[in-house]
Image 1: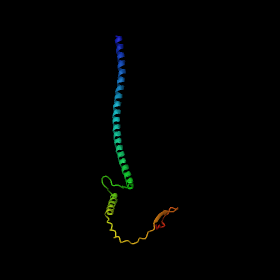
Image 2: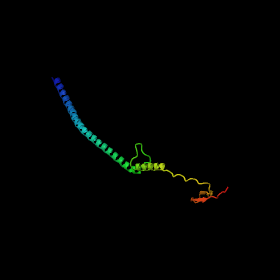
Image 3: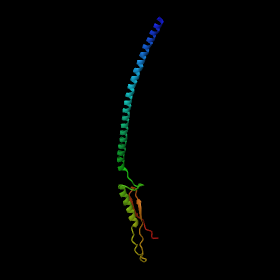
Image 4: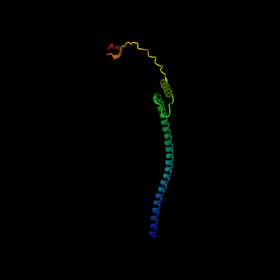
Length: 147
């Protein structure tokens, strides 16, 4: 009987010891559940923050591109018509050039006066352009050869 009593006392001590372990495990599980809920809330906040900062970055990029275009466009001069046609103020310049070229091509030169019979023609003096040492251009009449 003493041995059975000792076995039950040992069993009770083991149960008490195991009970404390089970309570510790239960507390840890509850704490983990609460921490997981907090982590989910933090992830939602981080996702929203990331989404708004991405939207802000896109808006900022668009603003920077528009400002750069507005700063660069006044300094760009189109000298050739584009593939899709000429537009804007360069169209006016292009159209003026086309009209001027067309007028030059259609200008009719007057007919030369009839040549009269052999009248002696006095020889003209030749004019020679030269540049002096100072770099100034001048026109000099060259001597006339009669032969």
